[in-house]
Length: 355
Image (tube, rainbow, N blue to C red; front, side, top):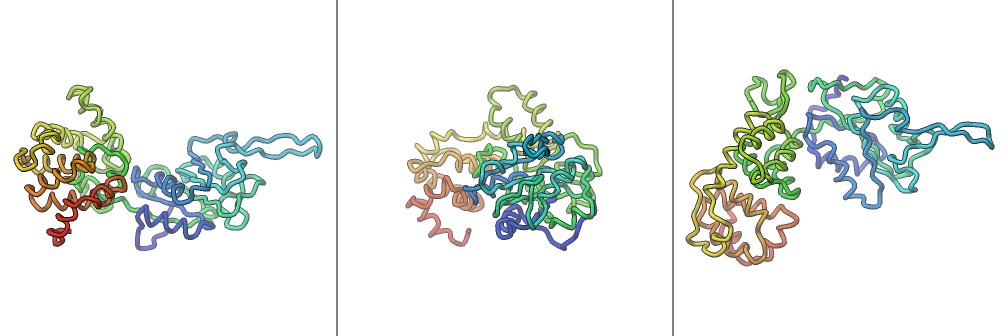
């Protein structure tokens, strides 16, 4: 499929805003593998809690997964009964994501095609309720992963090229989605792990997806979440098993690098010693260990511990103080703790130039 170039890209947040503002249009979100396009379904459902949500995995569907013909003996005709996964039988507007639509088999795409209409979108002969939203996802043709869309379909949709989130954007998401602090600390120290291959023409970045290379694993927002699940249970597995699992998730180069961050744990003071003795607890020497500690603190902080931790944090380099303050303020689950803390407010007043 050739792409329409608008000369720009959008973030996932911007894509959600566009879809919500014009629900009658049909947008194709295209971007690199694993950057979080599918996560937009959750974002839209949170914005529209009264809508039903339908995730449709197009490449893995057969015709019977969409609708089945049934006989109406009274009229001596047949009609289609849609599959319940489309949620249109529930009598509410539906947010439908046709995931990886551009990789679907042609008969499947043909059956789903009426959902792409602006006027009277439907599945079979059943119209979607007003305010229903349908959007598609796919990869860029330069990703070389088998995406295809015919001209008559392309004329009915609006392609939006979704860019890969940078490290700061991903960290904001990660803080709010229970990602292992050690993985967040690694991304903070190695932001190039979220570089796009389109910004790496030499192919020198050993962490990321590159369609010109044979790769079994690479770093992406999706694979980092998988890596987080592995690192979180590192105490239950030996070092060789950890490396093997991590290599399968994010590739060998990233796996070895993350393993070094696991070893930083030995350089960290316990949380209890920090809270009990904030003015004398050990300060890590290396930047990697500082990153692990700061992002771990964001996950652990509470109303009872933020004051002593702010005392401890003031002994760090300004870069790490600002890193903690900025990221804790972005966290919906932690910002109320920070904003209600006198110690945090005092730090902000003294360090406005760092923010």
